[in-house]
Structure formats: C-alpha cells, structure tokens
Image 1 (spheres, rainbow, N blue to C red):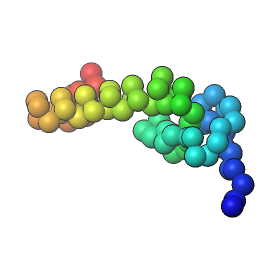
Image 2 (image 1 turned 120 degrees about the vertical axis):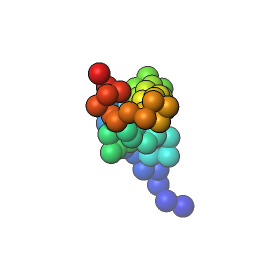
Image 3 (image 1 turned 90 degrees about the vertical axis):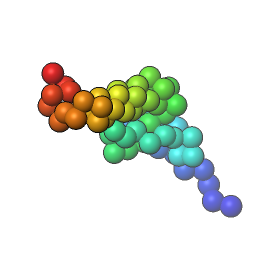
Image 4 (image 1 turned 60 degrees about the horizontal axis):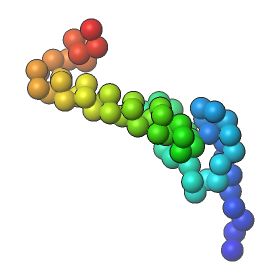
Length: 67
C-alpha cells in the first residue's frame, strides 16, 4: 500500500491530503482545501455559470455581460 500523499492549498497554503483536495478551477490550475473550495471556488463557478446564462439568454458577448 502506498503512503499518503500531501499537497498545499493554492490559496491559503495549508497542507492537505491529496485525496481530500479539490479542483481550484476556474480560479487556478491547482488544488485547494475544502474551506477555500467553499468560500472561493464554488462562488466563482456560480458567477461564471450566471454570466454564461445571461450571454445565452440575451445573445450578448462576454464584454457586454461584464459591464
């Protein structure tokens, strides 16, 4: 059995088990802890989803949505 692998959260730098880490996209191409996932990554994904919905709904491009 292989040993436990660890990584650091890309936002707060705490050490976490690799298996407990989360995908930090769209904010970073790295791994993050559960707290940063809940407080940063998930809200960013919701905002991105909302922007895409508005673009589709109003047939606008990204620059218009971000005004």
